Length: 132
Image 1: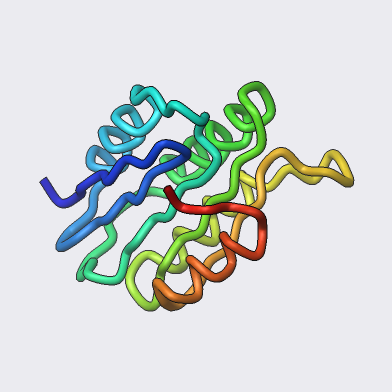
Image 2 (image 1 turned 90 degrees about the vertical axis):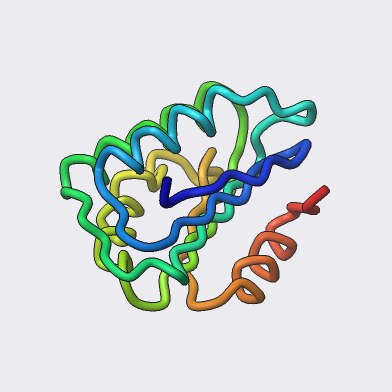
């Protein structure tokens, strides 16, 4: 399995390695949203640093983006940082376009694509997320 989930009280680290497919993304998403977060799902930190091939379709990326946006609109605000220094960056941009909540001045979902773990954690903290 090319992914691992590290659950926190208020969010999750989702770490991918090797070759990532549509099936891997959909399975990880089911696991992520199926988990109970004591403080609510406030953040996701998705790490693609160790991915060597990202074989996801734009259709899957659109579906995941729309799902993240809709979840945040109905379950509470969420911040998602994606570490994508190389592989998966283009598809992360496709996901981000569909995830963005542009219908309001106070969006339910904020996203950021970054190059490093430090940059992701710094952005999350700047946006009010303390990783428990």
